[in-house]
Length: 82
Image 1 (cartoon, rainbow, N blue to C red):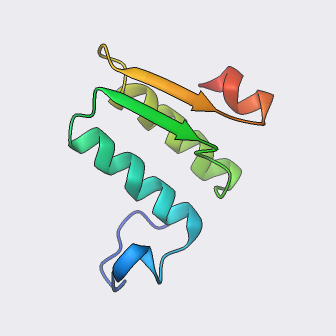
Image 2 (image 1 turned 90 degrees about the horizontal axis):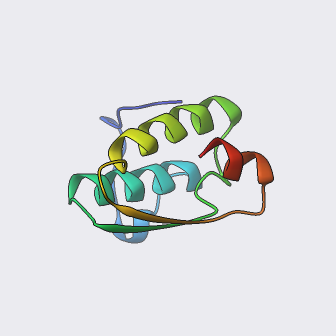
C-alpha cells in the first residue's frame, strides 16, 4: 500500500487513482475537514486485508471524539472490527 502519492497526477473525479486510493482520500478529507457526521458506505470494499486493518485503526482514531459515524457494510467482519 502506497501512502504517499508524489508521482501520481490527480485529475477530475479521481481519474488515475485506484478505487481503494480514492476511498482512503475521501475518508482522509472528511477527517481533516472535521466532519461531524461521516457515512461510510462499503468503505473497505476496494482495500486488501492489510490496508483494511490500517484504515480501521486510523478511522477509529480520527472519528472517536463525538462524531457520528454511520457504517453501511455487507461484511459482518468489517462491522464487528469497526
